[in-house]
Image 1 (cartoon, rainbow, N blue to C red):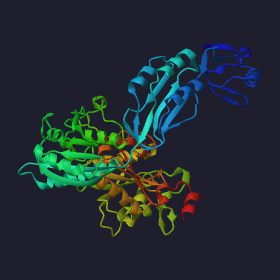
Image 2 (cartoon, rainbow, N blue to C red):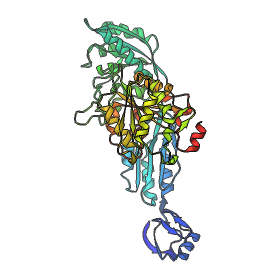
Image 3 (tube, rainbow, N blue to C red):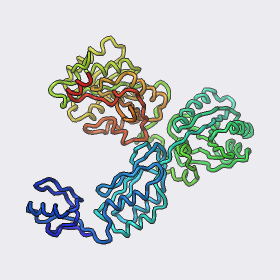
Image 4 (cartoon, rainbow, N blue to C red):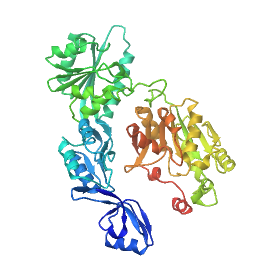
Length: 536
């Protein structure tokens, strides 16, 4: 391929390297300069242009990207269209994305003009998630380089959907061990399994003895579960310990012991006949993410849990919070405290001169509808962020909250003109100091969001505290309000501009739980007088 500046009269058949304005409009870079465009440029007295001229053995960027992407498409993948040398691959289903990491590394080493970027292998992904992008850097690559990459592709990128499974839990106990600990483990395990599409059939308890445990295993295996999880009273320390010894007594095998993930190091994978046996680490008594979740995630998609795969989990396997740089953590169980944060600081420029939050919608001001939903929910308290026309907004809040027992306050955002992020930061900073476990961010211009929606988010957070973002959906479309767990407060404080909590969903897609709702109100906000009239 030749690249450089040439006279316009010689440019036909070339690709424009830089966008250029003409008397009839803009010609974008990458455009093929045909006879008509060359004539237009000449009539506009353009003397020369910078172009890319393809040689006989060159493959155009779009064609090359499409060939590579097509070769990578496997089960559960949707292929996008080729444009500007790029083709994206998206997930067709919820599941686990699986591919050979070495294959991608080797493909990226053939030619600097050919790049493939992907998510991490064995990553849990949602439907429509962007999984990979093939991008050709120049306007064309040599056919030889393209063929070398294609020849080196030893497989495809696939998304394996989770399938339903059944499981049994066996817990061993030692003298003096509290039954309440074992009872709690049952609840945590049941919720963990549900998160991976599995159902807990039964739970039983046995002494922490290889013989008694083997008999308990034999009994639950006869009930036909896909998996048997064994939570020992003492952590597994060796392949000759109680749990692996019980597996061997039943004629089973130990497939792997140990895992390069923390928490979750002391995990054991075994098998008795067709039944998978998992010796779970002690940390699995907590809902906090650990190595067991990664194993269950893969097993739920009927993917093999091999020693080679387990060994590959070390990079990125440090899940512990680190003192000098905290990572998003799973909320603890119990009575989680949640505040409502109402963002009411905007200037409503699209609405006109009037403050839309004070405009009447049916029998009350727009903002009052949102405050009604908040005060009839089970949030612990409420904080309203004011900015534009703060005095009027505060007066409305006082009137709307009159007679309510819900504690509430306002905080003024002096930087409200800079965008929504500043109001979100203002509120999260205030509530974060109180030590709340989560915040429901309510937009003040959504009058059809009811207390039922807020209650649904609260229930999801308190029942399944393993996520960090809880987003309501209506007919699979994501809406508002959004519940943010305390684990993401630091990330909120780094936002800038006119963005809200939803941007965090793109940054931390695996931290999202979607909460289906029956109301389209989660999708409807009021920006203009005509939208307000429709809402009435």
